[in-house]
Amino acid sequence: MYYIQGADQKEYGPVSADQLRQWISENRLNRFSPARAEGDTLWKTLGDFPEFADILGASVPPMSAQVTSAPGTGGTSNTPSGSRMRPTPGVSEAIVEEKLRIPAFGLLATGILGILRSMTEIVLGLFLGSWPKDMFRGLPPEMDRFLKGYMESGQTWATPMGVLTGVLSLVVLLGGIRMLQRRSYGLAMTGAIVSMLPCSCCCCLGLPFGIWALVVLSNPEVKNSFR
Image (cartoon, rainbow, N blue to C red):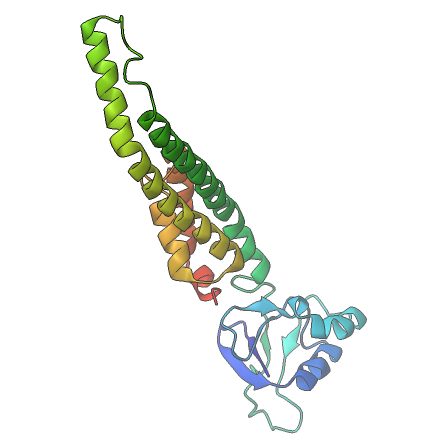
């Protein structure tokens, strides 16, 4: 079963596939007519439904297609009698995917770079722990104290910070993947927020893509497209 949308932006239906095929053949509907399948929340055009590709290819709709009352109903059908269909719907599947693609890839890149950074920090922490204690012998006392303090601080914090960065970057990476799949809306939002944290990954990359992703994900049509 399907629903159609009239020029008055009201929803009409449910209508069977056979009935839609009949209206298409009568040039009452065309490939640009807004429609959605029962159970879906995102509006498409009839041209987005592969099951109508054969009849749409065979029909030649006029510039202003109209939907009239269904035959035999005396004008009491649940279709918009005499109303013209809008030439384009609110947002189609293709438009939603286009909106999500770039910020999602930005989150993917941010997450991957963050994971690489975390691996570097973990290796650095382990390396500093095995550094020879007398390697600064012969340097001025002030320089010797500074370098030893730096090495001790790095040994203490590098590994824990690397683990934290890795976990946060993994969340960003999964958020980007879910954006592309349009699944787990909460995880996608979390990934966008975490990408803007300075401790998670490269802030100069994560901040703009995180903001971009939040703006796109806040769009009602985009939100409703998640499964």
